[in-house]
Image (cartoon, rainbow, N blue to C red; front, side):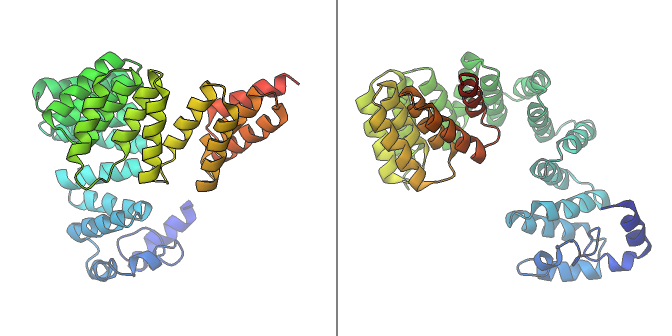
Length: 336
């Protein structure tokens, strides 16, 4: 919004409506705000635009409908009208979701001072620092949390992920083990099992078996997949392939098993089977970049560089941040 529009709108506040900045029809909000389940609350806000509770209630409904950019205005105004710890947590979460990370950090730093006894603000600030690349500062905050509350499983979980991102898998495993021991949820267990599998730790199997037993609804194929990753990493390829096949049977839309199975064939220099696997994956999800990248790897391995370059380019088209595809394209072009 430019400044001239802002001046006009401030001069005609009676036209703003619904507690949002800007004309509702012009900015595209009206269709969302005046459709169920939000319409009744919007009508109430029209009558009482300074009601912070109504604004927060509507923001939550908008968030549930994945209208986070619209919800931002309600969270912001609700917080300004009635700053509470509850609205602060929700407002900070929305700032992250809408890409306003610097605003989130500023808010959380203020909240940490205002509510020093609320560990949630400390944990959220650590998340914000992590996303901003300030990992040492994030780790220091999480250390404070685990020292002050040794039962804070969320802090241990975040520390585990942070250590892992810092390539410190030893401490990553320690922290995730602590989180899982305190709160043995599927989420905590899968994060730990993933690290076990990547470090060829035989505990992978027992942990994944436990997670499968607890998944009575059989909603998750991840434990089966991670067992496959473990066996692939220790070069027990027949067991790995069997587990990846089981994943595909349970959830054909889960793409990672196709890629991991194809990589096994690739590493065995069975390029025909690898190509068949990766090409089949493209028929299930045409926009999944890894499939095209590995097709490119296969073609490059058998000396078909033009075909390889084409598929690396396709991978990059679907994911502009695919660094390995960029490197492969550069490598092949330099060979010409």
